[in-house]
Amino acid sequence: MTTTTLTTGEAAVAGAAIGGVFIVAALISIAVLVLGIIAGWKIFKKAGQPGWKILIPFYNAYILFKIVGMNFWGWFAALLGCSLVYGFFGGVNFTDITETTNGIYFSMNMNTIGWIAYVAEAIISIVMMAILSKRLATAFKKGTGFAVGLFFLPFIFEMILAFGSAKYDKKAALKK
Image 1 (tube, rainbow, N blue to C red):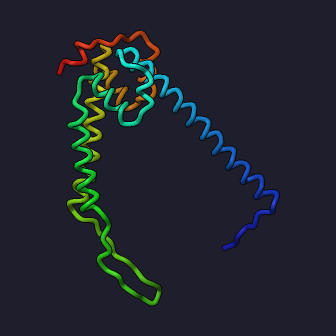
Image 2 (cartoon, rainbow, N blue to C red; image 1 turned 45 degrees about the vertical axis):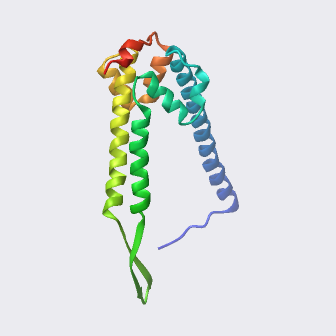
Image 3 (cartoon, helix red, strand yellow; image 1 turned 45 degrees about the horizontal axis):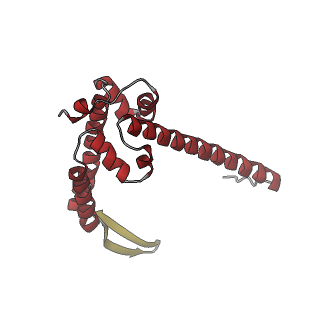
């Protein structure tokens, strides 16, 4: 096996290229964040809520649930319960420590209750997002196809809601 050593100049060029990639990625991320905030602001305004509420973490989720006529606290309690169960029971346990001539090896396992809570939290999140997508689409008089788009490509479909001609219908939002 042969190894290649970079010269100082080659290393500098490689480092600059990697740095450039990170800068471009950061700028794209900031642009997506800003556009997402603007879209959320406009969606909130269309639904009769002050746009600034999109800027406050957790509270913005509460307002979004309110806009679509869902109970935020039920979902929050379910997710918090799963997180607490996972926290109590889901930690990694070192069950076997073996010393050999090559070093020390640890065998690890995760408690079954912890795994169940971890999977339950993921399932609850996915179901919640699916229902929220459907309810948001319904609140803006859009169909199931639009709801599927909101679920799989939220950034694009939230832009369509925000900047398109969709109108919020409170009666449609409150229908179950």
